[in-house]
Amino acid sequence: MNKRQEFLTETRYANFLAYSEETKIFWKTHTFESDSPEQEASLRAAHFKSVVQRKLFISYTSGVDIHLLVPMLEELISAYEECQRKLSISEGVINISPLAIDDWPDEFEECVQVFSLCVLLNRTDLLKRFAKLVDDANYKGEDTLYEDLLRKRLPDREDVDEWYHDVYTPLIEAIYADEKTEASQLLADYCEQWYAAFSHAPWHDSHLNGDEGSYVGYWAFEAGAIAFLYGIDDSKITHSVYPRDLVEYARAHDG
Image 1 (cartoon, rainbow, N blue to C red):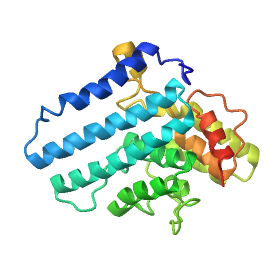
Image 2 (cartoon, rainbow, N blue to C red; image 1 turned 90 degrees about the vertical axis):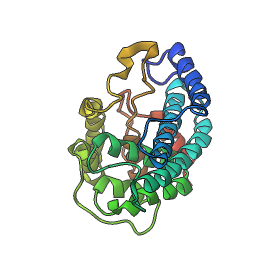
Image 3 (tube, one colour; image 1 turned 135 degrees about the vertical axis):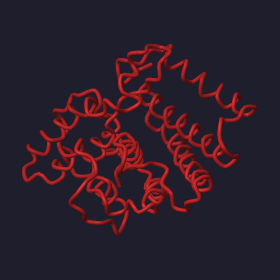
């Protein structure tokens, strides 16, 4: 491996890849505990969405070539669409969101990570598909960062000056900073406080469990996407959560 974060071991990577195949086989002949077939289908879809997402993250962390992430992102967006369809049937709500981004900071983070991967991998078509799932649940026009990650690529976004979660304040302020040096410092500040701000998230400290744990990488992809979209100088950012080579890839393939 030419790993991008120090916590990942070859054994942990191999364990996850084996698990991602074994879970497909296991759930062909088993069912999730549920109150109805509809709920079982929803739990199943959510599980496999999570597996696909974690495979994409750990692949980036392990150092795979960036272009190899694209088919994984395609699979992930399809998995979110399936997850939303099954959840809609289970809950009886047509336009339900696959993520509760207003209530849970880690689910908002998951949302903006996916937005950002679509941006940085230059897949506006996938960005449009994923944004629709969340927009249609009445999240459009409710959060500044949500809108600012989309407005450069998708038309008719909202201008809004409020956001759900305080953790994103430095990143939002970086977009609107008057001075370039201030924007760069705010971007750096965001990266510095990012990991600690998600101490409640289920993935926090997952690297402490070693090769048998659930660690797949800690990545503030949204910091990279904002630097790319808004021309913020990131040359002095050295924090390990910043996806530098992914931003460089986006810049090299822009336009």
